[in-house]
Image 1 (tube, rainbow, N blue to C red):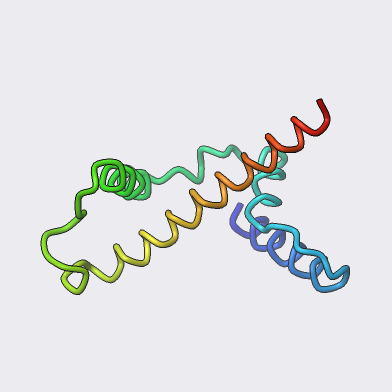
Image 2 (image 1 turned 90 degrees about the horizontal axis):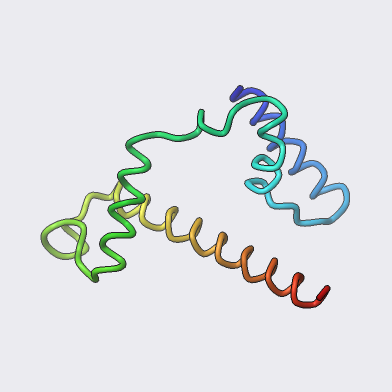
Length: 105
């Protein structure tokens, strides 16, 4: 399954280079997943806990760990920015979809 994902990533990168386009890798993989696997295979309990921690801390305005930024685990900081970027991308896609819907009536 991961070999197919790797092939899809390469395909998107090649198409972007050849055509000068900017297809989104994650959207392309997500759209093609049902053709070769179940989406549930990508769900990981540890990642889900990280997402829950991110949302909880963001919504309540609390720090995920005691102490200042320098005392937080570097891995958590990396995960934080990845999760934040994923949520921003999702929100941007939803806004664009709503605009298209409103435009087309």
